[in-house]
Length: 211
Image (cartoon, rainbow, N blue to C red; front, side):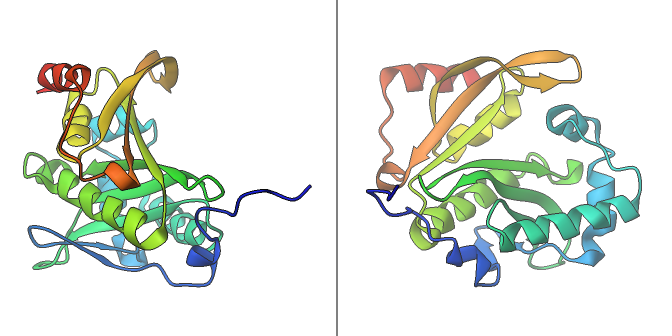
């Protein structure tokens, strides 16, 4: 049965092109992961906060290296896109940003991220998310990006608001964590309105609660 609409994002954008490096404000570079990053990934997933919210840990540097291979392969089959966030001055990995659950037909994806413990409190993640979002809308052609986090993850909620992702509501009992099911906040940006500073009264009220 023929579709009446074309895919919003063409798969060739991933399957036939190399993953780009993206500049972010404040001396940050979003780049593809490389084998030499395995030690940094292993270190990151020893952190209890990353384990808590991402429900994953790395057992060895070799396992982290396997993850990097999986992340890079995901780009070429157009199912996910992962970037290392590094300092341009030192090359040191300070975090990760990703697009997951990519639906190219509908032009939608979900933003995910983490920061190394030493990089927190410096605005690294919001700047990286903003650079990723700009690429997703302006270059890749996505229409809608979502961002979800546990209602107990207040730092992630602040990242969402700083990055312009409007709060849309609560997804009840939709995230399974180590201590059971969590309610999840849903935030989103739409390509045409991504830079619109206006927030509804409900959004302003929620943002004040998250500060």
